[in-house]
Image (cartoon, rainbow, N blue to C red):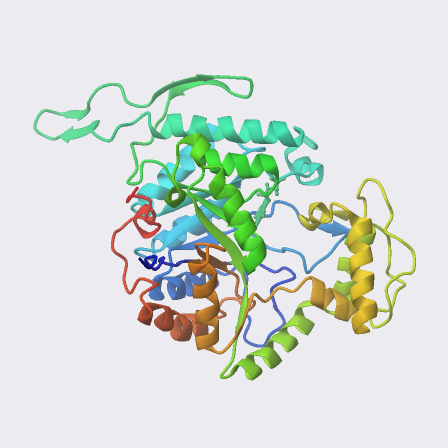
Length: 446
Ligand SMILES: Cc1cc2nc3c(=O)[nH]c(=O)nc-3n(C[C@H](O)[C@H](O)[C@H](O)COP(=O)(O)O)c2cc1C
């Protein structure tokens, strides 16, 4: 018996100015004007995407004590943007990243319940723990909580918001104009006491269409994966290739049974970029140009400094790698970047990079272009549709969160050319089948 075709899930990321975004492209527009958010969201909805996604960046990143201005500039408040988008879209899910380390469950629950009401059941919450003391300083909490406690706080934070969402069952608002009765019973009562939260009271927002927002999780550590397996509906991952994707997919889906959950209850969505062309060769040429735009000489040096943990500003990006090894110990050169944590063994990584540079005769910039490769899908629309479908059908993922490098028009070509091909193959919806994000993600079918 042949395996039934999996349905692909697609989301659109609005990244803000960072090192993926080519803000200098003549077609690039504002990263903060409402019209840009509207444009990307409406394109995603026209293409029947599952949801629109906002990351969270709470502090401008620094390197060598200075702001590095290609790194996530101008991310406005998530709830404000998503609430405004709810008014100009009908079906598209609206996903926001909100951390569980610096916030309070009551406030976050109230905000998501409100968003779910305003959007008629389209809210999703990407629960992140954030990790660095540098960001924490914005909240006067600094290095608040070591990693394992961040996840124990995240878990209880989320379960506390669930208690708040569930404190209304949905039948309490009577609003009987004849009798004058508005509410039935005593909705909203909660009482939660644990090591992190000691709260009780009455939650003021009636039950929203989805009851609880869809939960997305983006952590990658063992604690993060366990948290996702226990509680999340979807994972935003960084593993978009076949082997790495399959390994991640098998790992996290393998954790589900422990929590009495099935494969279909956790959807894996890696971040992915793409470059389309009329032919594969044309797309490759374009991709090379985009990579050089994304990794200028200055950016290449900044990337290298993150691994080397040293000031390399005197190095020529068109020259060879430093002859000395990365500086061991606490990372000090860059602040606020996830990649600090990706290079868990800088010495081993630097050796790999050196071998690669020597084997291929690469300069610093060429090497960084190669090792920080950001384009997952390069090719004609037919090639890209085939690549995406291949990865999903082979369980490297359940779909992708696409990150266009041009804001806000960078999704247009994908919507016009790739989506119809996926639809023709019967692996992507031609229309929404239900009103809520849970419907789009198939989470109501379990
Ligand atoms: C693909 C991906 C996207 C992420 N996006 C954000 C983000 O927008 N904001 C944020 O604070 N953390 C973000 N994170 C960080 C994680 O959510 C998590 O809080 C952090 O990595 C610490 O957890 P970990 O040690 O389990 O990875 C992201 C992580 C991944 C893998």
